[in-house]
Amino acid sequence: MDWDVIAASLPEFGQGLLVCLALLGSSLAAGFVLAVPLAVARVSRRAWLSRPVGLYTYVLRGTPLLVQLFLVYYGLAQFDAVRESAAWPLLREPWFCAWLAFTANTGAYTTEILAGALRATPAGEIDAARAYGLEGWTLYRRLLMPAALRRALPQLGNEVVALMHATSIASTVTLVDVTRVARDVYANHLLPVEGFGVAAVIYFGLTFTLVGAFRLCERRWLRHLARPA
Image 1 (tube, one colour):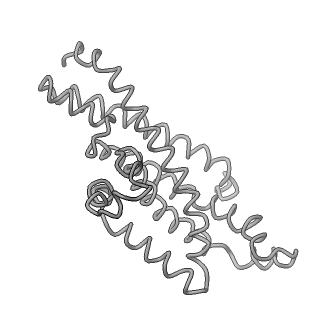
Image 2 (cartoon, rainbow, N blue to C red):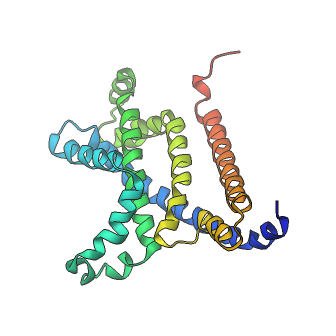
Image 3 (cartoon, rainbow, N blue to C red):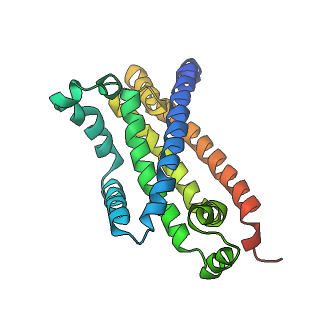
């Protein structure tokens, strides 16, 4: 184990970690904002609302994220209309393309997670809310969505951790993240254990932190579901 190489590469790993966290946080935030209205549409009885959302989630969950990233970063550039559009200054940037692909992907998974939680709402809760005069968006805002978010916490935690791991493929579109730094250490020094070992420790630390945070959230908001001692 060459500790000198590890020490020298720590600043680069720190910068790569910042890229990973920025990409993860912004993608999760945008994906969640996208998923909330889509989940409501997904459980709608109106086919013209639910079916397009179902198609979106089916396609995004049915194809690998790496393929989606390549289609956004390399594929869109093949069209003259895209290169001549006002969006081209953004679509030619690897960071934006990675963010767009990750947002669309996590938005699809989060949509289905929230839709499943909405469908699992007990009919008695809905009847009781309607007895108090809650209808339409007020019903969703005051009862259905808060309750669905609480029930979906374990699945949402898994999705956050999965997306955090998936950010490692951002290096395939030239972003210098943790995995890219590990590859550079291996390429420059031929030391795979030092490079990828540090990356593994960083990802493990992130996983441990995220899982712990969601466990605290579950303990706080799912306390009523715990079995009595």
